[in-house]
Image (cartoon, rainbow, N blue to C red):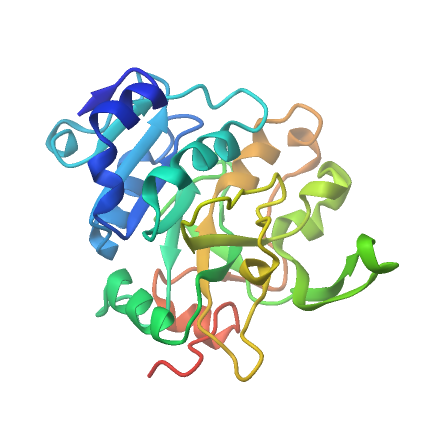
Length: 289
């Protein structure tokens, strides 16, 4: 199912937004696009919508199962613009978004579906979920010069930290139940990362409602959406493991020659299992057992 632009999709395919939860996949290139689409279908999303260039079509066997919307991902704010166009048409539905070569993991995701998780999250009166973007990188850059390899994927097992999020409207007093999270490649190679792109937190799963707007820093105009937990106890969080930063650092002429390897003494092979991320404290099961 192909649509020439977002207007075309909203006029002909908007029904897909009423079968939640919905995964929105934004393809900046073709790297691991097929595995990204298959992973999120396996997670249990009822609709998977791909946004990207016309030539970045889903694999033949997925074309009847994935909506493909032509969208220029090289324009500034391309992802936010698309998400904000879809929010009014998806009122009440859970939406998730990520880029290609990014993979959602949540507590017990090997034997529970994303719909089951969000049903519990809804019972806790939460309308959004904090997700940590955990950098993945190929262990051997000689064999994988683009830093992407599912079979040789590594992550940082430590080096993550959080800082209070200041509120400019209240003399930079810390915002309640909001933190800025840092770590991974954006922290270790921060000299190559603009300051406004160093955070690794993303409100990656949320429920659409009228008037809601996604901002450039992956937070929302509704401040309660940006909190990591409700006032009375910890809530579920999830992780999005991502090759995106590693890929960009190796493609960028200003950084590629400075990086011989991404591995350091705190690197560990990624096991492609939620238990590892839970053990490392990179997501939180909350009250869900």
